[in-house]
Image (tube, rainbow, N blue to C red; front, side):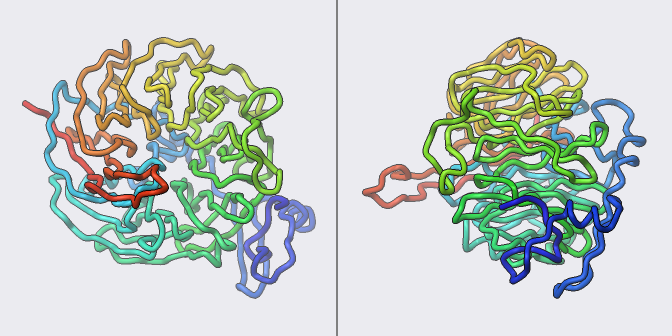
Length: 469
């Protein structure tokens, strides 16, 4: 595990590892990388960030600004902020259907409306991808090889008429939104023996970025993929621990950021992909939990949540019970907020007000000032918050382990309403038009009992809420 490599020099397929930095020095350019190997000609052309920067208007605009593109947490900066959405004062369940049947406790996939609003994509931990209309009418279901593993936990990125999603079978799928046809599948061999992709792809200028997980030893890699063909064009395997977050990209700052189960935040220059810095959570001496990967890292400060990037900073929660603001330039810690309990949710960030919202294992959702880390309010939601927090101009949406989805007042944290469901609500809530979509984990008995078989009592559902007039 020693850093970046080109797709034509991947280890694990009978090739000597090639340092991308060394290759660039030999070629003398950082814009395009051309290599020849037994897999054929591989050409890396760095994405053009200037278009994303120039097209952006309001700070709330998702990047890239493109009516045909949507992705997890709404854009490359992973804000999870929907300023135009109006959350109703009261809601009811319009429809639901069963999707999740696997006990794995990782946060479930978030339903993803397509850019035209005509289809909602729901990926399941059973390995299926469902397409329904906003009214809940089934359009198609695609059964995939991910059904032999833990299915899907990431969320699709949708670009035009194609959806991209990684599975716990270690593969990346491109699916036709209109028909459910599989366009291409990049498998385990192309990803150097990956065992899972729980990361949700980031998309910019014809290119996808995601994290893949590996075992023996527990490790990960950042991958760059050609969105048209599914061909890997670059990767960096310096990551320890099996990474669950999704990469965040700040084109203005020229940074790509993610975290992993080793408690480290990793940062690359973007789009050159030269490694910039790393930051170890877990206190001055780092985490002191169980030793992993032959002593290469310790548990205790795992970073599970996706990191929003804003105002030259990255905002990240850790299992060490702290929420951090890190300088994107050099990775230095600017402040930290301590809850004393695990933080693994995906934060939401309001760039207009400069407030970040995050939940944790202490059963609370917090509103923090992005400049200072000052607590503005906290709200008790009666259960762990491990999924995505969503922000609108007036309301914060958060799913809880107490089986409810909560709507909280953005300014005060007071409860506006809550909706009871079946299982733990760990899929993020997405407002779209006058509807709210989300998903839950199934209901299991004996899941933590080694002496009894685990029993699925009821599958987890995907839901659609509408105004209760």
